[in-house]
Amino acid sequence: MADILTPEERQEHLIQLGEVGWGAVSDRDAIRKVYIFPNFVEAWGWMSRVAIWCEKWNHHPEWLNVYRTVDVTLATHDADGLTNLDIKLAKKMDALADASTAASYQSDLS
View 1 (cartoon, rainbow, N blue to C red):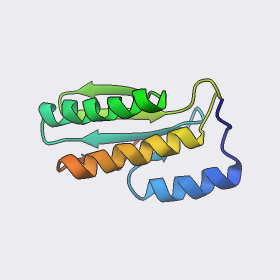
View 2: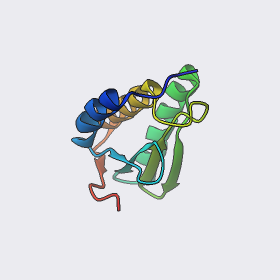
View 3: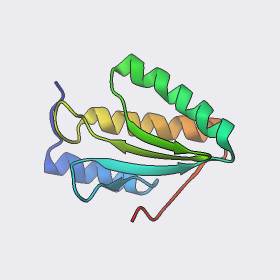
């Protein structure tokens, strides 16, 4: 099982991830980002590419897809909070979005 991030690790990672649209979830130990793709096919294609990595790493997101928008929440359920697995997956998701399409993100997560 993965270990929960220390407060120092959490702060360091959240500052870096915050610059690219990830934010802390207010009512739980998790992070969230809302990706916006040019269209549904781009969104679904990105989700398919992410799914391959999720299976490889045995770590799966909570996500919701509506047309061209994908709302992602990451937390390690068996650790009941944020771990390095979540940080690793967040960075992979961003890299796949950057490499494949003109994806943007919703900056206001409220």
